[in-house]
Image: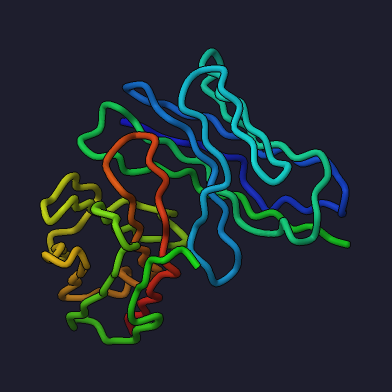
Length: 114
Length: 114
């Protein structure tokens, strides 16, 4: 079956530091890949997505590139802010599934200190 | 605000009881998804409905059931509750069922089984 593996957190960074959160996946079909973010007390929000190999998703300074050869979709940001503190989830949606549900990784908590 | 409304926000009950969680999707969205978030299992997909019909089923226990009504709201029924059912239950919605669909999540219902 499908699965998503993320680096475990928490990740603690100082403001303006560079961020990388690793994500790898296994899928039986041709997945679309997503990063969702969860702020305290809220539901998940889509951060960015990529729908085919070599696509780069970007939003709010975050980027991730769909790497089919390494089955990876690592999240990066050049300069984090305190307001980026949240839990980040990597996810996929697979063409081989009956529905289009998302399969999520375990989540990575990011804490940014001023 | 995602536009997805979940009620109640918090629910405290005892083992063996039955509860109903309610979800109103975003206006115009036909697909509804239920997820369970717990510390040990992470985010687990339970079930998806599309326009009133079951679309896909995930790791949903037989004690749990769901339905989507003609007005597109959905209910998740949990019965014979056990301590291990304590979790945050999210509802999400999307327009359709494509693999690239953006899911909009509600803020969740926190269920505590004592």
